[in-house]
Amino acid sequence: TVTFSVRISLNISIDKIDNVATITYTDENGTNTVTTNTANTNIIIINLCVNKYADRCFALVGENINYTVKIENNGNTPINNVVLRDIHSDGIELVDEAQTLQDWIIGTINPNQTVVINFEMQVTKLPCPAVIKNKVCINFTYDVPETTITSPGVTESKVVTVEIGPRSTKEINISGDFTLLDCQPPIDQITEKNVEVEIVSVEKIRTMKNTSYQGQILTGCKLIVKGNVTLNIEYIGKECNQKVYLANFTVPFMTYIVIPDCCQCVSIDDITATIQDIYIDKIDCYNLYHNILVELEYTNCNCI
Image (cartoon, rainbow, N blue to C red; front, side, top):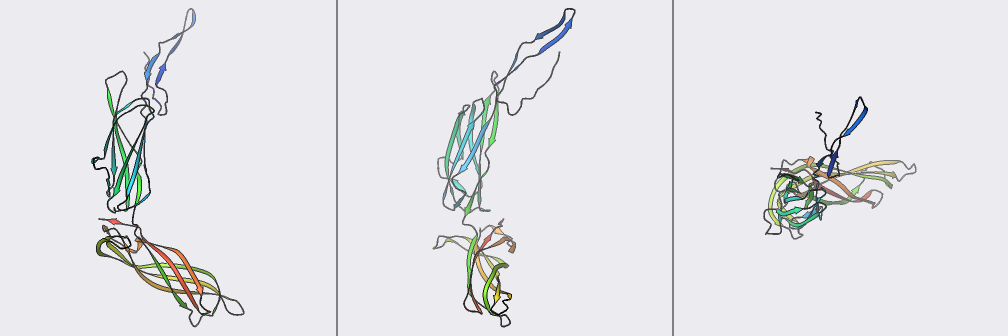
């Protein structure tokens, strides 16, 4: 008796494996060959593909997100007792009140059949961090042919991420006039300019929860941000030798950013400053006008 085992490859695409053995031997009559009967093995291919999509990647509190789940049976066996469960992070609720358990009973999905489930969810509050993560879990069973065995199975979709606003950002305009120091030569032409932003301090304060006249959602928590904007310019002096000079000016600022009310342990490292626009023009040889647009964003919410 010869016994051996084989492993069925994961990428198999046939429903049945036929196996035949050939025995070759010699006797007084010479070399002989005998072929065995064919051993048939039915192959069960379980290949359930689940994809989930959202109709947007950013939503505001109060808006609805439409989700689509596509379930494809790419195997060769019917999938029975299919139940879809939606798993999501805090901050959203189903719009359909009749579907309170987030479970959809689908039943049977035959081979090469596709089932599409659509549902709508509302953003009820600003989560922390400000993102909704959502996926679906599929539970099912399948029958083993020529037996009375029923086996369970489970698969999940990838996580769908939707950013929830309002974002914790604030744009500020810093404008005014600069006058050169007495020791600096007059300006003929500005050749280079850049701006540096330094966050000096941050402080979290409590405010009322409401919606402003402009539609901004006030979470009950603000971050007071103090900092400095330094304008560096390179210019050609209004002299015969046309030398290049450097000048810099520093302007303090203070503003606030609305942040989620569950944030704690704030620090200056949590604020990201981005220069959106720089405008500089000569008033005369000694005076400059500037207008700098800076976006501040609170990027690190440490939740309780």
